[in-house]
Image 1: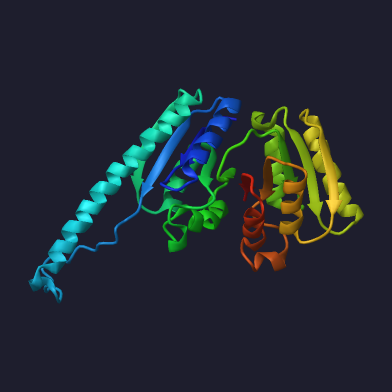
Image 2: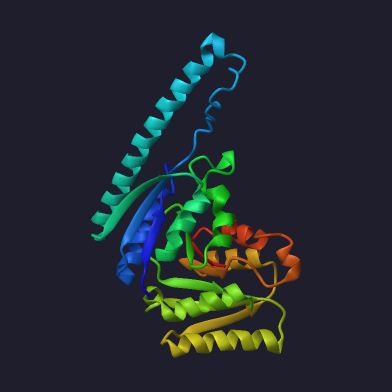
Length: 283
């Protein structure tokens, strides 16, 4: 599998973890890393040429505000380049030599889409630097990104730790099947302990889908355990991650249930909140 690891960093506490997880992927797959920082628009709308001057223009306040906006934009650019340089230093210190950095401006989701054709995977933090201020930040855009990306999206938690044991949530949906196929094909999971879990009713159909997934992984040389259990998926998965010391959760971003589809990403979002480990999402 070819492609680059695309790591999105900002000024949040998750940025170092994003770099560490990107380095982990690069080491195991040999992929180059592209680190991207996205500058947010300052929201200033230039006046129409020839239009009447807006109210307040004569006071000079609007000119001062425009100058402040320009200064703020310049400083954001300086900060963005510093973030990228620090990120590159972290990755190179981790032994990754093929690292490039790019400073972009615009809508985060659109920019992620620009990189996706060349991406082995996308890495970003669970929350952005100002996650309480809605839509321009990584945390607020997480659902939109996971819905639009065709490849895997790794959502980094606050701190990286060595990944040896992974839990794979398998609900029978298309995205879950895609996740199992990816694990079977990617060198990223070679040598890791894999555990497939279905949080569903105890039925022959559910048992068969677990058995089929297990067989697919076995054909790729991956020996996986299976568990069928009941309960609220987010609560069950969170408890298993904590009690059985899993290092990463892999799951489909959206289930196959029509009822669940009415609550877009609700189970996925709740699960990520309940789990304190990185989560790999598949659409």
